[in-house]
Length: 257
Image (cartoon, rainbow, N blue to C red; front, top):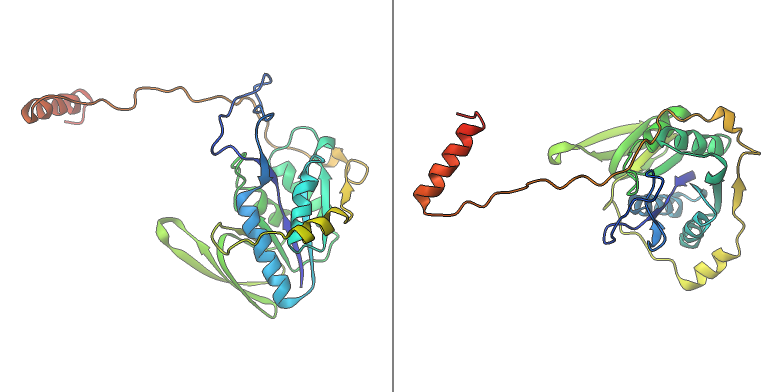
């Protein structure tokens, strides 16, 4: 089985103070740490599990600057056979559609049975790269996948829906899956594997292999800004009768009575 997994290096902002830079279109990253996108770690693990079960090849692909090669080397240390970096610096401002086009250009000539992506990136929260890539490749896809069982050329897939529901699909390979967090338990790369991965070659492709004129964005980032903080709650004080009267007055004022 031939597998491709698309991964992304992202800033870790959950516990950090995020500030917008002078351009108004990005955040200040000097003091931020970077790691593999969370749902991509689960996608990578699922890809490795399939490779261990069925054999074949596993290729990790990332669109990013040279620093993204650190993330690709972690994928190599965990079990990927080869890695490709698409030079983000060659393609100016990126949106989800443009990202999907670049990924498609990098993998369209590779043989694959399954393509994996994470279900969402924690830096831009587009959640559209995977499904757009599937459309560009002309293969069926399933999003928010929580279980995969493959037999012959068929895949039995469970995917998460709203309200706690789960959808069961039968799909014919080749396919693309966007993976939900929690589908598995991602492994750690051993120190020995990391050292070995540091010596492996990463294929780098850019404008000389992919003509920027053929890669078009369909959205333009206008501005990043911090939402203004408004009045969130009003604490009512007094006796129960007084509070009840105040609540009734607020409801009447809002036109709900």
